[in-house]
Length: 185
Image (tube, rainbow, N blue to C red; front, top):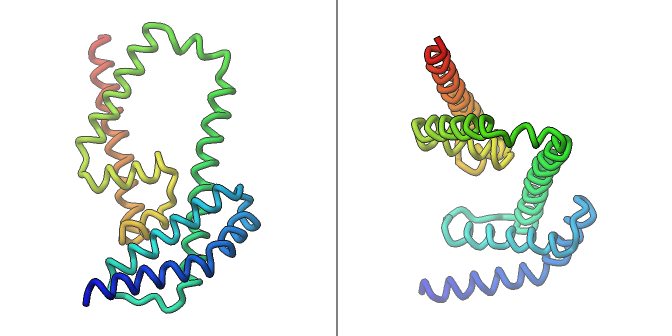
């Protein structure tokens, strides 16, 4: 019985793919300016999400087309955010061009390594969930709302965890500054 249900789900998924794939690709290309191959990747991810949802959840999706459009829409927005973060980083690195030689001095390298060790220590000292939410927000560039949706938490809880994580990092930096000040006395 379970095998026949799985075959039926695969058949339904395939028919939905045949029915909506091109339409969803055009949507991603026209609305978000993606290249066609990027749009195909986003649409494929939406169908993967649908398949996982159908296998893992007893909740029935009443409007498959709407589910797929929302999945593609959200994935395109996430992709645009990540691109903005990458582009801003590249621009900031290019703006620093001439200053790079100052940052490569032996003293600067040692200080940078110490700073990275301090941040690493602060991250691993905090609870796992807090660390994960901070990294999703600051490294992956996800919004509080998107993190909340992905993790099944309220946006307020995500905001509080990220704020506490940042406070933990600041506290570690202040304690490092105090210990460095004591060394120079």
